[in-house]
Image (cartoon, rainbow, N blue to C red; front, top):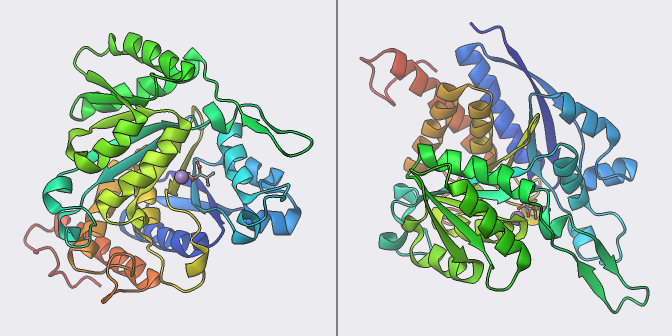
Length: 373
Ligand code: IPM
Ligand code: MN
């Protein structure tokens, strides 16, 4: 039994966030049951919920809880009452952006892979996407998201400045190259260097960094071309390195490859803190219906455990998720005709997890045949 107890800040947020995070917590409770790894959970509010409660999308108390935690588990953010009101002075999304900035979460890591078992439901042809395995390294706390922004007094003009420093680029580029070294040894920088000064700085900086990694091949794609290649030939990508807004856009595009955005996890890493969240939004239409896909949140939890050094546990969670997918235990985004509720899928994954572990430790018992539960 391990004695380490991890402090986890739990920020369910808006829309379907609380429902999917609840399933992640179930998984962590199962992890405790199996391995004895202990977690202390510190719930805190953010986004629209926090605005309604305190007027502030990122209350100070939430920030303190996050700073103090070993890791942050985040649900989703956004609320239609703010989306449809361009006059709103505070917005739920500001909570997440401030949190990323305050904690220095500069690297957003978004793995995208295709699941053989979901090949029928993907809008892409099987021969195009089968075997896709890539990871996007998106810079998260600079660029156009965080540059100076303004709307003129009369409301007829506005700007958002996109600016990058060499050191901001270097930090994320180092991580992307390190990741590539452990993978298929290829980094693709996605930029718009034929038009943007910032992109030319990205290219120069990354070309210098590439020299430190002679075993890694680097290539370059303009973002418009990358958007096309991602759908035409996703298999050719290994590590994609890109700036904040391009990364936001191409990661949603990439989610089509896996079959649903409801499958995609992410990690946002800083020097001291790290936050784990699905890449999907708050999906307000499904709020409270117990129909949302909990897998992105559960896989984000696996990424969190991996980050905390619990690598075996993290791997077992991904295996349990694959079992659910292989056995058709999926939500309505993945199968319109035969689907299961959010909580059922969470329970199923926990059950699989218990069986997987049992089987691994008892080689005579075949996977799926155990009667431990
Ligand atoms: C994401 C989201 C956020 C972003 C929003 C909610 C601010 O779309 O994490 O991809 O644009 O970064
Ligand atoms: Mn996004």
